[in-house]
Length: 164
Image (cartoon, rainbow, N blue to C red; front, side, top):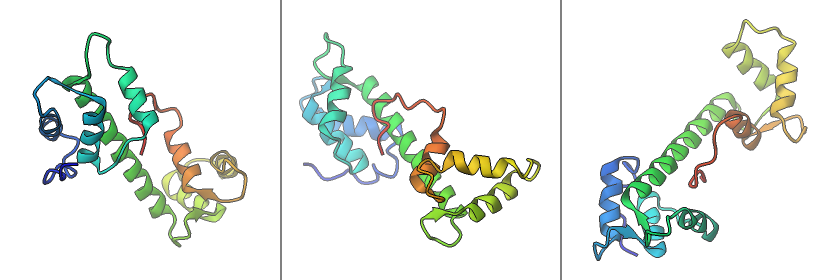
């Protein structure tokens, strides 16, 4: 594998970085990335090796008349991946801000304090109901997984590279 390009991870969401990586991986200038070249490109941009299932999903979306992933498709996929990565990072930052005791979960009291500071006008009776909704496994604590699911509720996760 070639070494990651300087600064590409920092600016992976930009078209410039995607174009630079696409050109490096399309070393024979055929205008598209093969399956293996695509995997290398993802590693270069995100320091992450996509699974076979993820690559299969991407490759199955390639039009039959194309021999691989064209730049526009690659750019769309990488932009979606970067957006998902940023969203997950922001979700973690919000969760840790609410988890003031750094336990890795939120108790009902943590949730209540947070809820009151964010939505002081809502009736107090809404808080236990909201807590039960977010606490998916009903263990009395909100894990990051529970919190993340609540934050993602209703969002489109149809992107092929919405993995984090």
